Image (cartoon, rainbow, N blue to C red; front, side, top):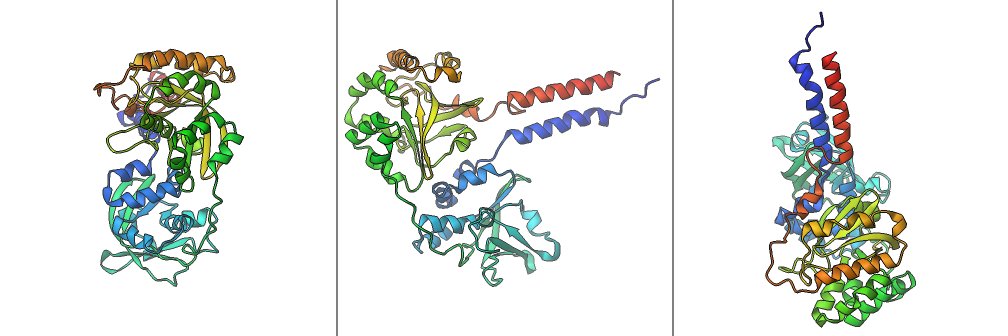
Length: 417
């Protein structure tokens, strides 16, 4: 006679799978987390323009020693270059997990932790290590390894903890380090009016220059810039509508094709969700959604869905992607109902169709018919549909759900036997 399976054992596998896949479904995003805490807005801003945010998001286990606006003001008063600020802030990103509890339970009361400054090879010797010491009275001090053991900054509070994934802890001051604060070479400035025409983006570049939008793009290059350049066929098909826009709306449309951050293709694929653009200004959102479909990356506005067809330039801090459609914001054109917008999407997915010139042209023409009308006061097409793009359900992607289904099937088979 078969011995019955204990209830605890019967529940063990499904619970394990639930915990496993629900935890991997949510990758952390430091920019979005800190956006909920305005006291760290300056720190958040500089994580973005130094590209440290992308590095933090790519790592599975990380601790960020956050500086409030007052502490960041002290750092900015030193007038360091962006490169030096990056080195200083990278010293505040530990490549290990430290929650508040772990800080107060350090073995031997002290430890050395490697940082992004050390891990990226920017530090000299071991100057990229931070000394963490649990002092008397529960006080925890932090100091760089090359600072003679001086603990010049102290633990203030835990901001956010996602155990063994990301921990954000506020500390009192900038951790000082002679090596991190050393002058860095200024980046070579990229002249957009010279590089864009040479790399297959001449038609779009001409529009930027004519409308006076090129200056805004150029001023954002050194801090990081991602551009979406429509193909010449897409621009030609859209030109009649472009000519009907006011001068101010032309500028807004052109700025809508840029983001004030460098996002490599891998970073773009992992950055699914709503993003702001150079045109974003207060109440005028001018945002869109980045979405991946297999190896394809799509840019979804409420009016059109464009596909990234090529990388024209990738020279950090500048990256330029080619897209098969002009990005049309809902602030300037009538939004397309969700079901109509989604219907044509599969046609642009196969890569073999991307090289055909007539396809983008026809697509733009068809969608422009619906985009002719001004928006009026239709605010019901806001963000709710966008916010679901970050997750595919409790178990993440379709692939993860398939694995769960297979494992559960095997488990039930074992119970039946």
